[in-house]
Length: 319
Figure (spheres, one colour):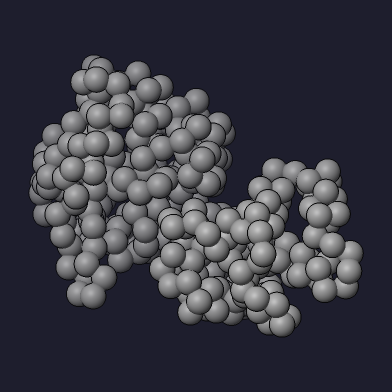
């Protein structure tokens, strides 16, 4: 009999991952859905927005998902529990609540981007409670999550990882990177280091486009070069910058607070290892300016606006 699955955390990434579990996971039981929200001023855990979660459930095939209202229900009714939340505090709070609900025998699979040390602490707590833990951070934007094209990085005990792999490559993702029977922090180290490529790419594109505009080359010709030589995410971010998407959108694709969290983790990891991530330090300073200018709606692509402003241009382009 197939295990009962649950998915906790229905943000931009989580919704796409849950959708693919339902549509391609060959589940013989409805996927249990739960979302938590956090009151930013106090850190208090509040009930999720019931209507929003029911509406999401209704976008899935009929009878293939069910919304529950507490993490206790998730634990009591599930065998494998996927989590994907915003930061270290959110996942720690979620797991602490779950572990108060007789989790023995359950498999917790965390897809959040958190500090490797946090992952180690969670693994210890979960194991001591008689459950098992698999770290499964993912690479890819929300569009990749929706399309089932994520890259899943798995670490943990072989027996537990084997229970999770039927739902990664070919379901939520297009490829797996395995750290089977290796410490769970290895998966998060790769995720944190890997995310610096995105931060540095956005910084490089931003500086280059500003230089192209200031020196008279023109951003159109530079974009053509980027698209022809690099394509992929380089061309996507270049387009987002030049189209003005970086300052026009109401909901960020990669929120400034999450980008800064990833940058802090990378810089801390480097400091502990006795090195530095100088490009990340520069990008993080620009993200500070993004937060000041755009608030929580700021997107990582708005580094372009911060670099523009430093060069004497307007934060928002004229597109």
